[in-house]
Image (cartoon, rainbow, N blue to C red):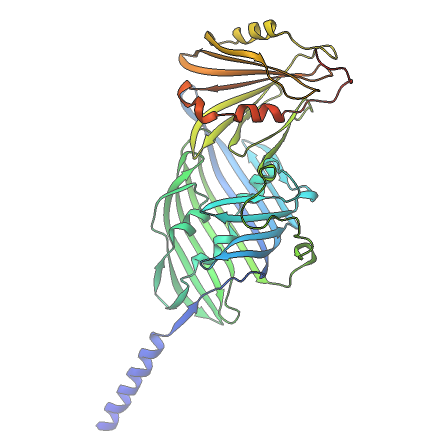
Length: 443
């Protein structure tokens, strides 16, 4: 009887140790580590635009591929905060209501830096400004800087769960601000040296000034021997309200990621990264957006806070958002060409702006020439008035080049937020370049 009791006790103790066995799911990124990353994304759903006060659904499909080695340049609190990427592939295809478009990355912009400082993400090229399409292509895919934050960072047993930290959720959901979330991770099983983790829950936040609600179901694979998160499948259902610079969306997206430690390739060697600024302060020109008119009538550089909301053959419309709040709208309109060396007179310009449909000017606050450079002539007109029953302030600029090319730039805002615009209208107008014409200077 005593032997049976002793045997039962031993079995109970051994069984307890097996059931309580824990596994360290920890990855410790180090400066200099380099990973080969491959990402694929597929998205399907609908975009909702409002016409005559009613939502109009438009079918939306997208697919993207990104392949790049990524070298860690800085680490803080267990997460990479700055990396260099050498994109070998970066392409996306987007189809809206049957009309497709492609986004790619220019060869001279394939070296990029991704960083997160004070919870503010930034992707830029040390070679120069990106276009908006290039920025969207490389900054809106799955955030690899926050990836290892999905792990518990400690030893856990099968069946254990943990809450995903708020900064990690905000980064992986691409929120400007996180309102709430209940995203948790749990260890499902350990098999053949691989730990299988499930991530599930929902998150609510703000993106481009609009409310976004996400439901997430993801699987993570962690290799115990190498102590590396090696793969992820991330599925999310996304409901977004219409914002000041984005339409309403209802989509489902699936992202698949694989990664492995590799030797540093020549594209990310110390010599290749010599142009990358130290620390997190980035020269302003590297963070600007390069914008070119499809017909070659103008080009400009502008701050990232300006978001394109409409573009036709006649004009380009952008909106300025500051921490998600709408500040102002700008409409850039190529105007009738004058003779080389000439331009529309100030009087004619004022009359043309007064005759804009739906616009009732009431008070001219300021008018006069704005000095730019020897090649361009610029005139500014600041007017208070009513635009479709709304009291607004409009700053009109006429920019003329030596070849007779002319562009009208109109900034529209509530007078109460004019201080928020500050001198950003002058900065945008000052960057406007027109085609080079004869050497004659506009009069």
